[in-house]
Image (cartoon, rainbow, N blue to C red; front, side, top):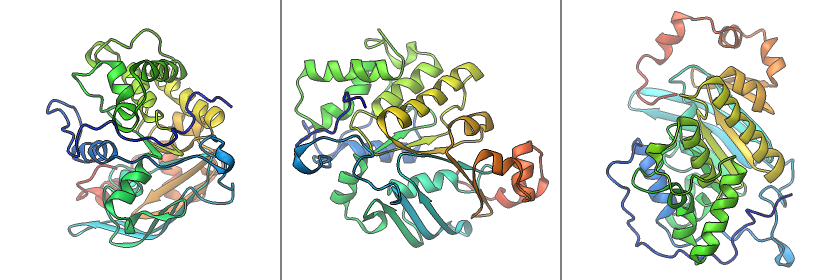
Length: 323
């Protein structure tokens, strides 16, 4: 097990103030903006050290029978549109769970609930032993340092170099020297298969490189869980497979739990330890890819086969929040 990204002991934010301003030109939606602000504007990092002062891999110390995330009878509506209708879901540690379903059924809503960006109208949302929907702001900020997020469009800061983007969590939360931050950035970029790009700007990178840089940033604070929102969107099949390989690498080498929201069936087949499908606000199937391929459920069969159903459009026609 590599020790390149061991938990950061007694980390304290270096301090850019409580209201770090996200640059106006950043390419990110409202919820991405909120997550980055919330994740990086506080002054405390969770103490991830284990007993006897030994630093552990992300998944160690958490029994394999204990879910890293648990949703219990979760309901969520936006106006009159009911998106989630009693979703109950356990996410096992050190495994990758892929969430499938047509656009507009609430897949990304689940990610926002897990990070506390939105609250359920009813039900419970748990991260390990913490009930997210009942945490105060400071407790929620502390918890978020244990969650990495790979955004669909990467959400890199346009005016920052690659090194500045990747080291941003360290700059905000630690007192590491510039040399220490540089070395950790180098190791993170090596982990995601990038070399010699530290001084480039995001505009000088390909789509696949941007995703890799964003993934390097997501693992800088040694998260227990990484959320992947459409990680292969906009990439050609070869670059998309490279991202799939990185998801597998983080799972096998760093013990990172993962939740992947995707429409990419090739990606789902490759990275999933377990698949979950949402339809009409409820989970209608769980299992392996082979079990999905043999499913008797007509919605699952059509999705796996890529067969259009006009009824699906009717279900999500009024849904404003993507996926």
